[in-house]
Length: 209
Image (cartoon, rainbow, N blue to C red; front, side):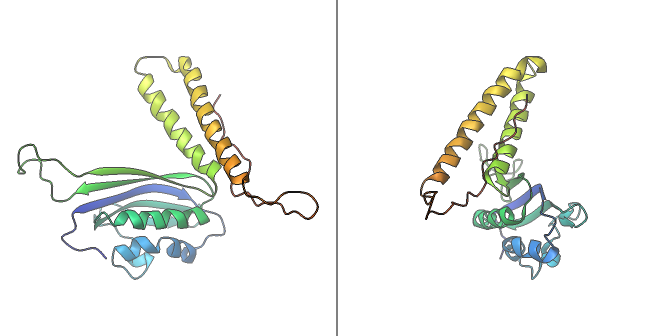
């Protein structure tokens, strides 16, 4: 539970597409570490942000969408809460998604603070998804977007196909290594042998051509 003297204001921002069968009760259970951290007794009670102008935590049942624009006072221990929430969201997400988390130093005052003082602000990008391929796809898409945005200051977008292709190669290699690591330890196939259940299956991230 947080206190009024918490050293950070922590802002969580992102959208997660959920499986069609996920209902409010399942989402409430998945997000329990967050609303309990805020000192609430339920998701409905804890969905409101510290700031009234922020929508907080919203569940769009028609579009099966979780939307978060939510701020809570807290400390570094909120990172453990995020780990738990991400693991829970992996179980109910239908597609990969990125979640942005910003830790704002509540004690830092740029105008009245000591000269040369340093803020403890921090930014974390987290990824969730139903399988490794979905998570890597989001990571790949964000990286391509960042690289293209940076390089278009100097080159025409049509010239950057080779750069995107190299990024795709890196992610394909990483995915292949992950699949290989999951294959290790599986029971042998054939008579008397089982078929290992590969979480995340052999679906590779899409490529942009």
